[in-house]
Length: 253
Image (cartoon, rainbow, N blue to C red; front, side, top):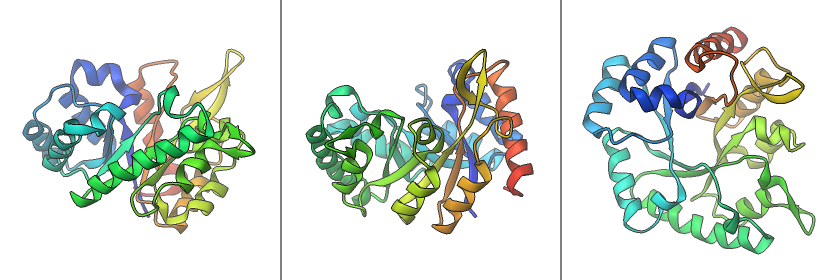
């Protein structure tokens, strides 16, 4: 099966204060991989040493759109090559890239170009969804407009199961539709706190986490990435709870 990783955005305050120390602690929690959300000006050599010392590997890097274009892309790929990360993920689309159905089609063209450059340099390029991609344009979700106009060989899917559910979709059906194109799943549970629906520790909410992972396994999804965005206590403690509950739920990482 695929491996379990942590998206460091979940513990962003700790990462901002002590990036290398946070990577070290995440490895000690039992995660196999770490998915980055910025590197905080850390030299690649120093980061790779910590990763090697702790036996944790790169599980992708969320990289903003501005760093995926022009000369910035070359620098981005060079850094990721040094830490042996081969998965580059665009985590978000600003409004001007998704306001209309035609915007999604134009964005697909841009993604194909980025994906081609990534592939030529030994990388995989993917896009990570939120809920807004499932807004419909002439009856078709932006999510489908985007991926159906992208070359499947150049642009992969990192499906956020929480946000797909939030938007009224069934993640298992999306995984089946996009199959082996789904290279990573974002896993977080959904519950209610103080009357609001929000992300919550795995196993304490209502989502079929085990079912999502089983669906991904059918298509050889490589990474199952824990992410959490709202907390009642220390996010680092929640990260520890999440990996423990995940392993208890589906087995050894």
